[in-house]
Amino acid sequence: MATNLLSEAALRNAKPKAKPYKLNDGAGLALLVQPNGSRWWRLRYSFGGKEKMLSLGVYPDVPTSTARRRAAEARALIAEGRDPSEQRQADKAEALRQQFATERAAAGLPEDDSFEEVAREWFEKQRATWADNHAERIIRRLERDLFPGLGRRAVGSIDAPDLLAELRKIEARGAVETAHRALQNAGQVFRYAIATGRAKRDPSGDLKGALPPVKVSHMSAITDPKDAAGLLRAIDAYRGSAVTRAALNLAPLVFVRPGELRKAEWSEIDLDGAQWNIPKERMKMREPHLVPLSAQAVATLRDIHALTGSGRYVFPGARSSDRPMSDNTILGALRRMGFGKDEMSGHGFRALARTILDEVLGVRPDYIEHQLAHAVRDPNGRAYNRTAHLAERRKMMQQWADYLDRLKAGADVIPLHAGAA
Image (tube, rainbow, N blue to C red; front, side):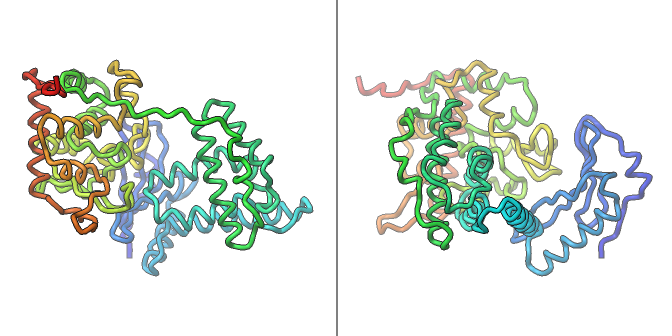
């Protein structure tokens, strides 16, 4: 049984500070006090070997007794082998389904499932196979671009002109690539509706060629050692927030994808063992990934641990420690340092490492590709596991970090393709 620690007087008198802080009530329940004065109940729990956080409402609108009751109900679900966060989403989906059914009946519409109901059902079926950031982008795209116009329509009643009208709205704001992605997602929903007996055909197939083509653009990246030296010195001189500065310092040292970096959790990082274990749920290839940490990377992480180590995320967001930094933080910092969109991007640190490790330092390409978490297979066609070539990759990561230090210090560098002339 949970032992309650907080008194009503302590809760009423909790004043905001410069940074968010928590008042613990025991057994994972805490009140998070934000700098703006808002006070949120949070329940920290573990499910499936992963630490999670559940919001239980705002104090005093949600009184202490209610927060404790909700926490107890969540713990009971966990004891039954159910994730409280997933149960909450399922309850919301069921409430939405009932709401739609009532509205359709009142409007004299058919009782067929709506596009939004089918789309959310399809999404829940698929999300286990996607990385978290990919799943977030899809549901956000559906909610923002397709549900407002099509969500309450019976999925089987939507035809090609209906869908095209919504895609034109996306196109009109200049987001042509998003319009193409929304069309692709709509087609996936319609095909799922057909497979489950709720639609007869997929109208998205009729829209081939209806949207303007997407202009292909590559992720901008600095790959020349001389330019990289300037980038590293600019990062060293960056005077923004400590969290952003730490993320900028770590990015070139580990060269993971931007989403993997910003969502890093302290539970994944072993500072003493100098390695970072990223779970498969966050990886593009849906395989766990091991990142050996150089001495420089460990030092960077130890520095930021003093500031964020008591929370979940290594790089928490500016507004809430319960969320990771936004996906535009690194990009915005690069722009403030003077690097334009045609010069450097968050993904650019990967291209920087891949190019110089190969063309300047002469590292074996399969070591590089494995560390980039690309699909690498052995001579028999089998995928390498996360610890393959670990000793060699540890050596490579330290060699890379030492090389970056020399670049930043102004050492002579070997220009790319110097021997090709």
